[in-house]
Image 1 (cartoon, helix red, strand yellow):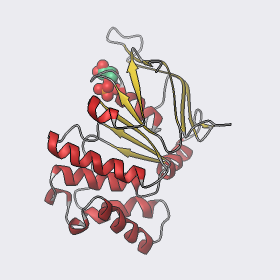
Image 2 (cartoon, protein in one colour):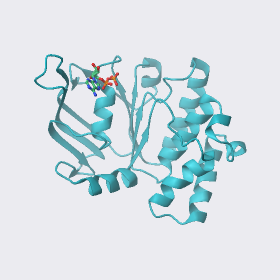
Image 3 (cartoon, protein in one colour):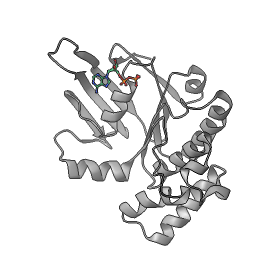
Length: 227
Ligand code: ADP
């Protein structure tokens, strides 16, 4: 059965249900992302992209519906299982890098590997390889505050890929950068993803960036519009 790496079935999510300020953000959302595919998740700000990515990334739970990873439903799984699946199978990139300020670029990429059981030497070699791929070998020992915004975000990409996830989820990964830097950093992200056979779901409101991915999924009225 070809379930796809990520499948969302009938996902609904409201904030403050029943209250006067209730917001129905997702309303029976369906989507599948296949292995090796880079899909753009496109919608205007406030349409629910972050909500959808957090549910897909097991950082939040839906009110209804199923999240399937590699064909396995994560509904009803406890926190330990969700944490293991998240750490092993999913890389998450935020609009702001969220690097640990007291650690170097390399250490920020090494730490999640150690948490996942990697040996120290292998983790260091992988961090060095990932930094080289994004052109930052010369910044390995810099702390985040000693890096530019675009460099910080490239390190965050490396960290998201550190454990070789099968699925990368990115929430407006270049939304915080000026257009020129955004272009360089986005190209680095695509190169990193295409180096592997991982799947990626990348939220953006930038249609030029979206068109460079394999498929565009539009979120509208809480659902993915039919293509
Ligand atoms: P996007 O990522 O597309 O900008 P979000 O998923 O962040 O959209 O938000 C979708 C809608 O849900 C917005 O109207 C937002 O105000 C609302 N929302 C998001 N998070 C919360 C929350 N924790 N409590 C209440 N409303 C929220």
